[in-house]
Length: 443
Image 1 (cartoon, helix red, strand yellow):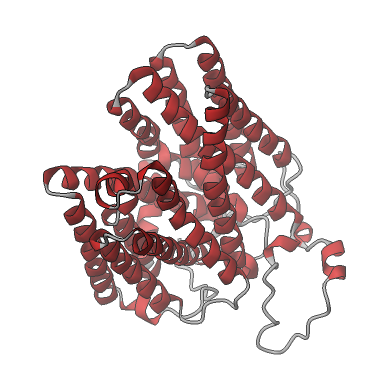
Image 2 (cartoon, one colour):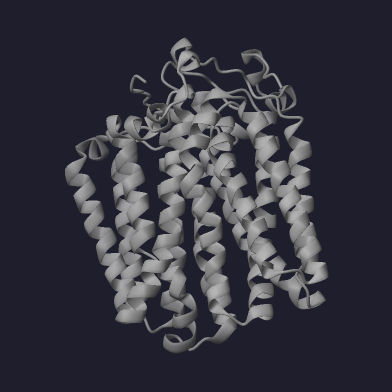
């Protein structure tokens, strides 16, 4: 499956003709909020990712409902995250090396086909009321496919647009994911409630992944040559861990990932939302639904603003302030006994978290050479994925041992302390200007 030449990275003529002419000065052209969207390959990838994300969010709701309905066990629900994260922990680094050595579009295609088969198996198991053990086997297969999909798709996205559109593409990707996070759970819950079954949701998730598979055949990512050294490099544990070594040599990237890692690990307010809704805010399941939606709504609003604003000029200080604000909003949420104040804080922390996501995603694209993008993306996926699962466990454990209030407030305080430590340990982050500065480290 060959990739096309660089000439194919030109934006669609229909879109460019529809756009008014822009005066180009010696410094920079005027900011174009739709810059990344003017490339057909990126649009197809974004549409496919949105459809798949919708299916995933719907699947989460339906799967949780069916497992609890059949087992009446909280442990069965906790096992879902464990089964999904184990293959990611074990396979992410080797998957990153594979993404750097082989056709990334082909890897994404194979991974999605495996997910289609696993989701179809879930549908059949739901119809036949099959064994719970087989459901976990399907989830393990999905987790394995995700381990290979994440680094390959992240690196493939960089081949659909030119480098000057990387930051804009990060905002559109985040917007798509947040919109799916707002719409997917609600739609999945409605379908389960209406049909009193999760089967249709499983089937729709299968269809969503299959549609993305079809769209992949129309994506002709531009060719980005890999260095002769990378081609000659033999598969070894040293090359597998090269992504980790690269981050150690790139302080700005390491600082950005560290900030996001500990913010997710410590600031796990969303994990304890059922407790706050029932015992502290006394708003019941309806209020819980609003509390769960608030971070995604806040993130969606912020990412739409970021899309239409010029690129960051002080990205480093902005990232530090955003993560510190995330911690402060978490503290206020933990101390609040007002539903509306709690809702506002969740809205705010969701928006601030999205600023962090956009800056970190843009840095990963602009500061990483093409031949390293798979492995570096794999390290990022491993750290962030593990921190999501471990963060939820940490929040639940501290809430059980002490109290939900202490768990959330302590996590917020810890996040602020991490920001201070990162600012002191990596002064490069305090001095970081635009995200388009591309002082890439030698591989």
